[in-house]
Amino acid sequence: MKVMFDTNIYISFIRNRSHASELVRGGTVKYVSAIVLMELWAGAKTRKTERLLSQLQRPYESADRIVTLNSQHYIIAGQFFSDLALKHRELCKKSDFVNDVQIALTALSIGATLYTENVIHFEIIRSKLKSLKLEYLTADRG
Image (cartoon, rainbow, N blue to C red; front, side, top):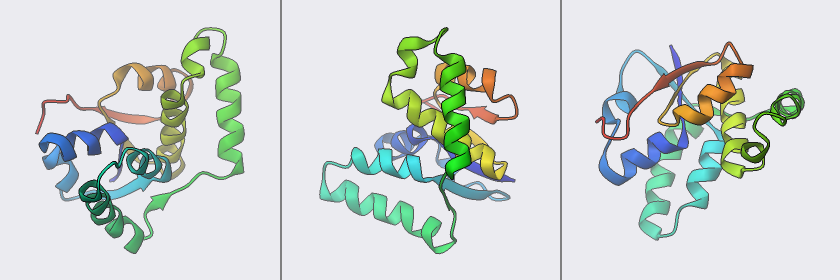
């Protein structure tokens, strides 16, 4: 089974080791969205965090499992925002929501199940991207 993790899963793990069992679970093939890496690196404020992110990123690079979007995915994203703009105009302007749409599209592009803590964003996203496979985790789960 292919799996991906939203940025918040890695952040919870880095901060307090939440979701360790999901991150190391056997029987899955793990991928990372390039958007998740961007968000993680944008939040790296110390050398220690940078080293940790390098360690996290390395296996994905070695296995060629960093997933990027192509031009067709961005067209789909544009159509998604156009369709959603009337009902969720303010949300569509927020960079974290825009990033979450891109993360969802990367998971869809390879048929991966996406693990996240963000129920609100991803239920809205799944209302338009019906085939998106999601697993919700709570922040205190380890």
